[in-house]
Image (cartoon, rainbow, N blue to C red; front, side, top):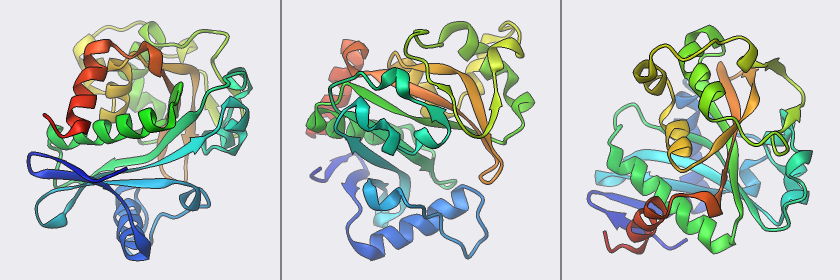
Length: 246
């Protein structure tokens, strides 16, 4: 992916060990690691790392992307540690997995988030991906904190039964049976993390269970966007930003 800009932000791929070390240190803080610890795992070497930077090179948003040749390769993904992805294995087109997404505490500008998704659109288009998926995380492993948002997911955003991942390893919460109906849609929407909110706005869907990650103190749900189902206006807007014409 070639670098590109929007307003005061730029998007580029991390290059070299210095870029990656800075990213992993900031990511470690974002995901609650000790102050001196980075957040590195075996998937980092398999991924491209996207950086959205503001003035002076300050990091605003970052995430990693792993490109897989088809659904048959999903067992190599990060999500496969927690979910049985065999229902998606029949996909013959490429699949991309977005992970370790974070926005820095100093900069929550929506323009930075839009540029991040435009960068993802470039990668998806370049790979010819049919599916974009990942583990979208809520901060805090206690599901009760996220009851309203989980109610909204259960009521309106569950994926097709034939495609929903099965249970894998980990502490599983089958939330549709626990959360009850949506009583306050505004509160439910506010409770969705920015990444998950954008997935849903693009026509994405979630699985029917969440997994508690006690190590990172998060609760995550498998999330998938079938790229052919992204609303045309949304896709056109992201591609315009990614082209540098917006």
